[in-house]
Image 1 (cartoon, rainbow, N blue to C red):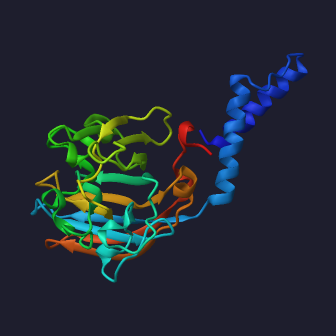
Image 2 (image 1 turned 90 degrees about the vertical axis):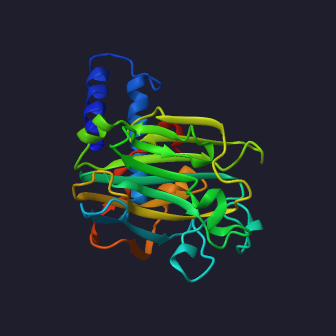
Image 3 (image 1 turned 45 degrees about the vertical axis):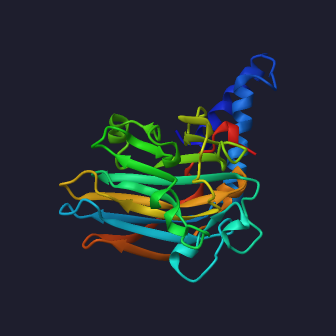
Length: 304
């Protein structure tokens, strides 16, 4: 039910109870719910804007095939002219990037959105090694992305968080396969709070991931390595990589990821497309109608 309609109903109930002689309790569960809805409506009114979104079709004749987009915004850094040097998430200047590092506090929030239409697109959100990150560039961790949200059905992990530095215990299911199938053709939003850290480079890292509309994180990991040893920054890609629904065409829609050092910054981040690129042949990436910034509900723990 629309929050505005629900708010009106709750206020009506409170008014009727007051008329009937009931004492209105400012801290009752119903009152608290009204306050939360009012806060959300105020946030929506102040922040609502369009977020770029894309439809990607991966051909059935290929397994590994990718289409990715790169975005710029106030909470990403640009360290060069190529697409992999835009939209950079930097937490330390030691890698050779220009300072100051935006995430030197080592806390990062991300808001990702996807809608599966047909098939399973594989990797849709990719925090990848940055080629300018000295001294190893692409080659940290054997050139494997330290952060990814993967949408897989053929290995029964569903929608999951891949934290590769913790391999072999690196796959953490967010939305199981059966539930993901039920969510087809609807947008699913993932709120992420991440502590950028390693056990051997204290503080250790952590990661929490909520499905928007829920108040309990589905992933809640502590004392983990969230990046490769010696790393200072990531590049970030939104799209699709590896048609895990092979041998069928895959169709998925993704929204540009929003970032920030706080939940509020993340919610208000306004990504702008810089470039799109593909590996493999065939398939398409098409801009579609943008999604509204207010479509993703904010978990209670992240409200400001």
